[in-house]
Image 1 (cartoon, rainbow, N blue to C red):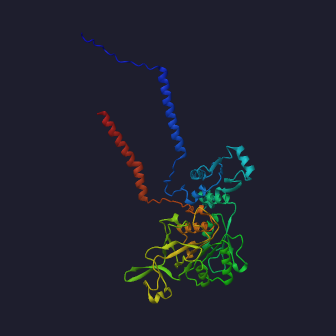
Image 2 (cartoon, helix red, strand yellow):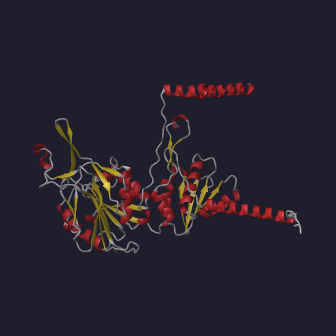
Image 3 (spheres, rainbow, N blue to C red):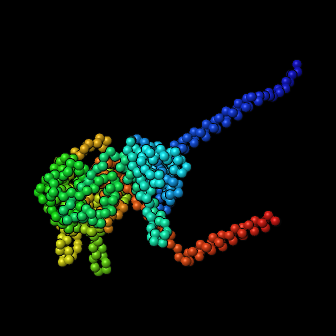
Length: 492
C-alpha cells in the first residue's frame, strides 16, 4: 500500500488591530514610566561642581555643615529690584545653598516692580523700605536682614568724577553664613579677651581681622580686665588670653581656676618671649607645660649656618578640631615655644593639635645664641616631635555620641599667628575651629568662608597682538581654507 504524503501547510497567525494598539500603548506607557523614574531620581540625586578659576560659588565646609545641621526649614526671601549689580551672583549662590541644605532651604525671589502686591505684604510683615535691596532670613520665627551692600566690595575711586561705584568682589557667602548663624542660634555666645597683660589691645588694628572673623561666627567679643571684677562674668562662655607679657596674679589665677571648674572654656596663645611663671604653673595643673625653648631649624648657607624661625606646623588628623585640615601645613611667624604633654593627670584628656614639621627642634640656650652658635644638643635641646598647640578637656565622655558639658582649653605656643600680619587662611581656619570647639559648636567646625579676591588678567602688548592675530586672521583664514578645500572636492 503506497504511503500517502500529506503536505503540512504553515499555520498563519493573524494579529488583530486591537492587539497591536494595546501593545503599542503598553510600550509607550513603559517608556513614559522609565523616563519619569529617571527624571525623578536625577532631580533628587544630582551633583554640582564649580570649575571656575576662583571657585566663586563653591561653598566652604563650614557653610555646608551649618546647612546640614538645620533642624527646621529656613525661608530665604530675595527682595531685589532685578537691576542690582549682584542679582545674578546672589541667585547662583543661593542655588548652591539649596543644594547643600537638602530641601531645608526655601528661596523666594520678589521683584517689587513686577510683584507689587507681594512686595507690599513683605514690607508690612518684616518692616523695611520699598527701595531696599535685602535678603530676609526667616527661621523658626526669628528674622535677619542681609543688605546687598554687605555682600560686595565696591571701588569708589571714580566718585570724584561722577562715576558710579564699580563692583570689585562678591562676598555673599561670608555675609549669608554669618547671618544664618545669628538667626539659627537662640543665644549669642560671649567671648572675653583678657586685657591689661601687655598683649594686643582689644581695639588695636593688630587683631582687627581676627575680631571681624570671630564676630561673623555669631560670637560677641568683648574685653575683660580681671583687676576690675571679682570673678569672670557669669555670661562668659569663654576667655581668650592672647600674648600676655605680664604674669597673672594669685587672685587672677584663682578666678581663672574657678571659671575652669564651672565648665569654663579658655583659649591661651603664649608669647614665647614673656616670662610668666604663674601662667605656666596654671597650665601645668592641666597637663600642659611650656618648655621655654625656641622652635627652629638650621640651614647651611655656604660656610655659614642660617636659622629659620618661621615654624611649619602640621595639623593632627585625629582631633575633631583639626582633622578637616588634614594635609594642610601652616606657618607660625615670630618666635614659638613647644608644649610638653602630661597625660597622667587624673580626669583630663590632653591631645596635640599642631606639631612642628620634620627638621625643627627646640633650642633651650636661645639666650646665648649669638655666643654659643646654633647646634642641636640631644642632652639639653628638645627633639622632634614638638607640640605647638594642644587641647585639654575635663569631664568628657568616651562615647562621642553623648554630649555633656565639660571644661575645655586650647593652648598655643605662639601668640602672633592670629595677628593681621600672620593670619593666613590655615591659621584662621584653625583658630575658628578651636573657638567653635570651645563653645560646643562642633557642627560648625570646618573650613571657614574665604574673602573674595579680585582676579585681574594682565596681558602684555605682544600677547594682545597675538590674540588679535589669531581671532581676526588665523582662525578665519583656516575656516576659509577648509571651505575652499571642501568646495574643490565637491566639484571633482
